[in-house]
Image (cartoon, rainbow, N blue to C red):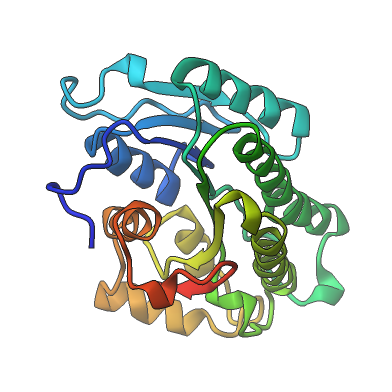
Length: 255
């Protein structure tokens, strides 16, 4: 497990969906470790508020980017490379849960938006990073945030389960296609973190989402993982010699 004695300072990471929730938590922890970070979301993320000596403002590139736009995401990546010289770690974290409810009742526009963000946005980020790694010396690590819902069906989550299953397979394919470049690709399910997405889940009726009771119980028990805990394990996977059994290219990991 990564800790404050592990040196990841100077490594460059991009995090999408970094304005809140897990993404904002990853940004804060990465910056605390002395990393250079590029952070984006539809709303421009705030630079992490930590010790300025560890991560002054010139060590952060923050921008408003909708991952549904390839051009906007590519331009953002170019800005990060121009500032820091390279990208070592790319985390496709941006994602949405809605629509929730039986597929027969889902709003078709919301369903299409879910796929555009959760699947196409991940594919766009993966493409951009793979091309960047091929443009320079050395490998890189791609982490696509997935979910246990990629493998376990939940009534009411057709869009989310389907899109996260697609993320797992896209990651496997990228790992195979880019293995000669030193790019390592992982789909990582971080577990349950108390974010706005979880609040949305807990607001559902059993008719919308029959498994809502499970998530209400997790909240009652306070059995959440912290974004910092997740960040530590992602850094361990990427840079500090995680268990070799976990480092199989394309692996879908549950933290």
